[in-house]
Image (cartoon, rainbow, N blue to C red; front, side, top):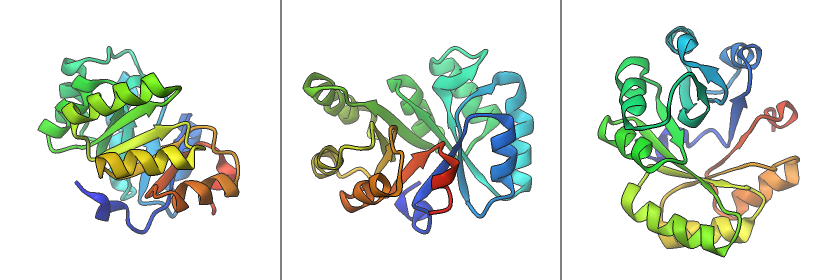
Length: 185
C-alpha cells in the first residue's frame, strides 16, 4: 500500500494498553498503532478493530509471547491480518511485503553509523514506509526521505505541537505518538 492510504491523517495514535486501544476504536482516526500486545489477544483485537472500521499497524517487535522472526511475521500476516506491520527487523518487513501487508521499517537513528547502516538495510527491505526515531530531528527526516524517496513517519520523543509541526514541515507524512494530548491536533 502507498501513501494515499494515510493522506488525511497526520497523527497516528499509538495505543500502549488495551484501554487506550479500546478508546482509539471509538476515535476519529482511520489508522491506529498497536504497540504492546500479547499474542493471545491479537485475533480478538483485530476483530474489534475491523468491526470499528479501523486499520491497525501492529508493532511486531512488541508482541509478547511471539518471537520476532520470519515465522512469527508469517503468522501475523496470515492469521492476524493487520493492515500493516511495524518492525526493526529485516525479515519481518520483507515478510510483510511478501504478504501484501503495509511494511513499516522502524529505524533508531542514534548516530552516523546507525544512519549509514539503516540506508543499507532500506536498500534490501524497500518498505512502504519508514518510521524514523527519534522523530525530533527534522534535518534527518528530510535527508532520509531525499535519499530513499520512501514516505517517512516520525516517532519517538515528540512531546508537543511544535515537534509535530517540525516533523511534518521536514517532509514526514505523519507522526506516531502515544501522547494523548497530541491525538487531537
